[in-house]
Image (cartoon, rainbow, N blue to C red):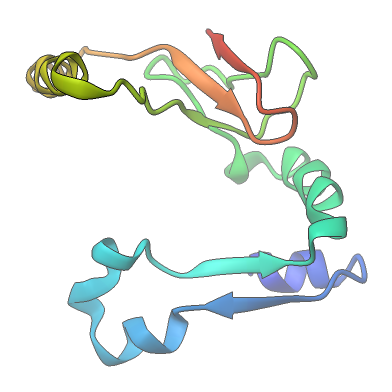
Length: 120
């Protein structure tokens, strides 16, 4: 569906790993599922198209659409904390324990358009 949608704007794309998952569906989470690839020069335009698609936005646990505080894009993902060393391992373990609580939310996000990390 997404491939056809961006194709209607004249943007070429292709699916990556779709045949691998067809052969062995159990490996999907290990390889990151099916990926839609576009040319580097079309990336920003695709993000603009995704902003207009209500099902393609990230929402917080309260159902609010998360918007980048820098560029107003809706194409954001939960930011991965990249701490190194023993401190990073300990923080990762603590975060994993916190995630057992269904009301836990980590409110740090990364904008895919401008690469800004922000809190929502």
